Image (cartoon, rainbow, N blue to C red; front, side):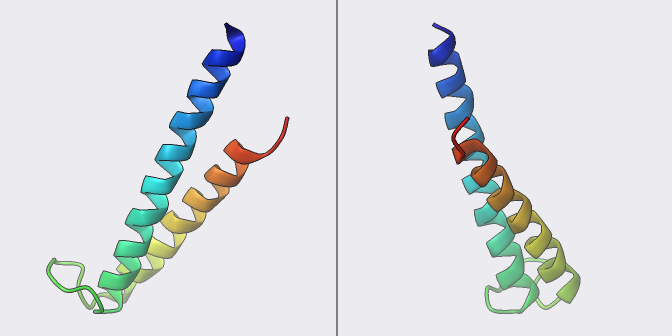
Length: 68
């Protein structure tokens, strides 16, 4: 029973990490004017913000994936 709870928490963390990484990549592309269509387009600050968000997502996925 405890194992199932840890599995669900791990799955939720991984899904959140993937979504965080994907949104960070979208921010990077919009910041570099590769993906147009929002107020973030062409603003390099959003590329920096996106890189930070993507790095946090990757670290969170790594944390959830490591063997305990």
